[in-house]
Length: 228
Ligand code: SF4
Image 1 (tube, rainbow, N blue to C red):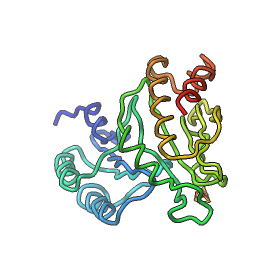
Image 2: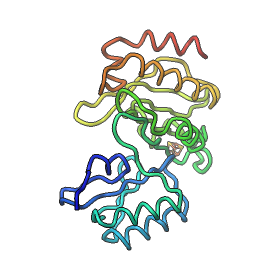
Image 3: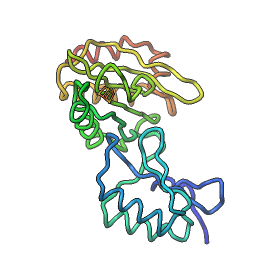
Image 4: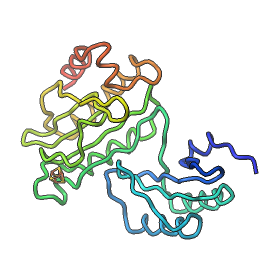
């Protein structure tokens, strides 16, 4: 059986260290899934994997040990259940979030509503490099937002945005460059402006933090201040 690992990767199937065996990444936005979603994940893991499910550090769900010959059957289950798979490469990734104000008594903002709104608008968007966003409900920062390309934290004044963070082999801490934004729609607008700035200015593979380190934060700051 001929396997096109690159094509499968773009559909959420990542080849494992074991040749011809794949781990399926499902897209989870805002760190919350329905029991129906989980039941389907369990069904796939039991019928096509090895009965195990992995939860990634960014709240995604991964089903390992799927042999190549079972991928078509798995895709059929995903299609019928309308479950999105993870999208890798130079694109907008899914948004992680803590419980936020809908559940947690410390929450200042509805983190999951914002995460969903961002995913609905931008998930999978082509960009110069991958871009990760996290949303956290208060200063306790359970979602560790400064370790993301764009982090959003709830506060009494509204939404505080952090730009240019990342983890991996060259970690950087995201920084605030504009005052807190009062409304969710302001955040969505600021994100749109930032993604546009990123697309116009970043070199291929250059993360937002690297770009800001190279060109400085002034232009992005000006664009955001003018658009608020
Ligand atoms: S960051 Fe705040 S709102 Fe979010 S889960 Fe932690 S304590 Fe709750």
